[in-house]
Image 1 (cartoon, rainbow, N blue to C red):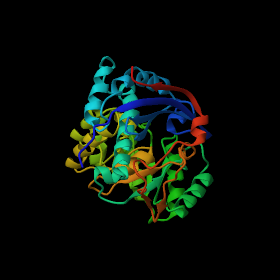
Image 2 (image 1 turned 90 degrees about the vertical axis):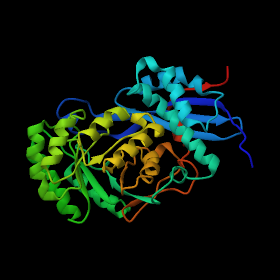
Image 3 (image 1 turned 45 degrees about the vertical axis):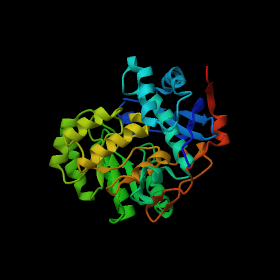
Image 4 (image 1 turned 90 degrees about the horizontal axis):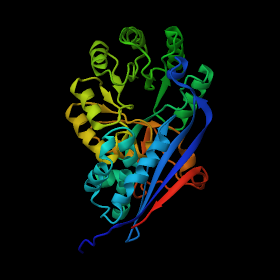
Length: 377
């Protein structure tokens, strides 16, 4: 059987606004840097080919940037029409050069991420394989932890109740937010959750970049009594040297990387040994093509992996990492898709459905605020 060349027929781009059931607050709200988050804006790319194959990918933005992603994708997506969808690396480069004047990070590449991810979804569907299997999996399930129940807008009673439900649902670890102006309040919340879930359940904390170097060191030392799996983003995301010094000073592992918007920015984290656990986000760094580059660098440096958000994508990518990773469980995106990811015995199971294994729901269509169909000229 010989390969029959295919070509991209259409690219449909849609912007979808997902309302959150509760306004979400982390430390950036309590320190006055941001307002509570009430929605997440998604950029979806749906690709069809002349042979009838389809692929779905997405990027997203919290608080700002969604309209910019959509606008940039509309400008460059025509470049992909007519090309062979299997040549993903070639297509990524072509799309990148189509928008070269706005750079290779941030909105510029986050817009490309939706298209890039859709191409991988399409390729895996063509092969009849889950994406993890197409890429080459090391495992069929990944350790998982819950974040969505641990925000600072929730009372400690709400946080502990959600922790119990998460564990009962087969989720293995619990992460809660810290970084309040009053460090004693942070310690009290962590102590309450540790007492509630017991010593054997993995517990993580996330300061969302709110501490300066001296505060992070002081808090990090006080938090070591709770046997945390990691302390996340204790410092500004771009303070690689500060994170490196903190990682060297503390026994508790340091995790960071979710806010960085390119492989190049993560390279600095890796070069300075700024973390023990790296937390890249495929939509934020430009898609799966870029994320796979980053995984190679992280593995060579001996880092552990815990990708940020977007479990529908990151479950597959984490399953390919040679070292035992984590994946972050968020239920926020559930209304967008018809399928659900399964958790059992502390792990998230790679679905047996081809590609990413998700399809857009009618609710996602209802929340679509604009759409553009790009066809051959």
